[in-house]
Amino acid sequence: MLPGRAGHHDPLNVQTVPLPVFGSRAEACPTESLLYADQPTGVVNSRAMTKQRPDYSRAAGGAALGARLRRLSERLDRDATRIYAQQGIRFEQRWFGVLNQLVVHGSMSIGELAQALNITHVSVSQTSRSLAAAGIVRSVTAPADARRRSLRLTAKGAALVARLAPLWSAFDAAAEEVNAEAGDVVRMLDRLDDALARKSMFARIAERTGLATGEHDAD
Image (cartoon, rainbow, N blue to C red):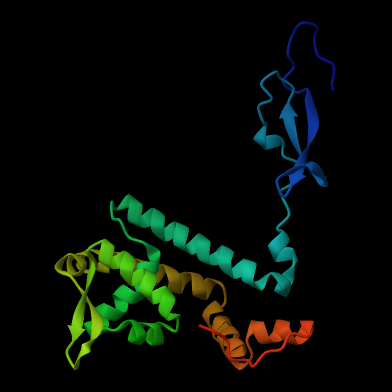
């Protein structure tokens, strides 16, 4: 440490403290360190950070495809949740797809929703139960077949949609802006969708590990 005047704390006195990797105190990263002010409380001097943490997922390239997609999805959902919270609206981002389909079509069965959204029946069922518990949708007898049940917006759900419509327009505009700024990433996602439709990740991994597969993945 740099020498200071006797009996006085020198704020420029610093010591290097290694950062743990993956939350383990035993694994110190040799290329990263924080500079702490030399004081009894050990307060971090944020301006003295020598290096940002490396982005391991980005550095892994295509091998971290799933992790990158999850991270981006979480970031988008987190920002959407913040907007709803600032407006004083209780709304879960996972509700949007089902809610939007019901607005467009009036009423739909679980199977029809799953097909329209290209997601599993289980996912739609979980979302619809959450919407029903919030009083936003209700189950009704299908007009064409009394044995079938469909989902429909309640009065509360219709009022919520009307309130959220201007907000959703802003969401759409912001998403279009980000997509354009990123060089039409949606077109790349279309290509990713098509590649997985031709051959699933399950089949690709099974092929490399010697696992038997009929290529008919379970929903």
